[in-house]
Length: 88
Image (cartoon, rainbow, N blue to C red; front, top):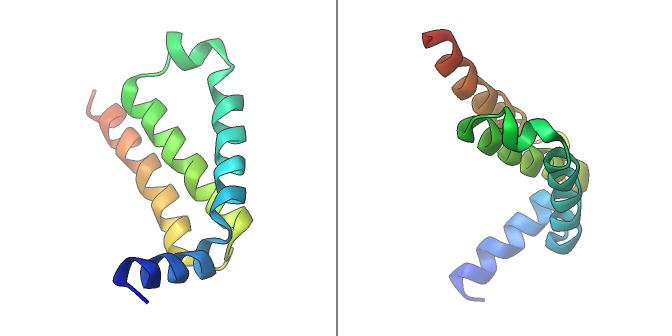
């Protein structure tokens, strides 16, 4: 097995089937982008943080919900936006 195949196999065990995870992510992003606030109110970092959080949520739903790094990543993306807002 090649190095990339090993990595992909490990990720599959952690996050589940990539096609299913991609569908969950696309559905979540579609819901978020459907709101007027997406383009008219949210700053680029807010949109990006929400999209990355959607990926992490999809990984939790599709894979191992007890993998703490996904939960920490969600916290981290939210903190990046909050830090910027608190600097104002």
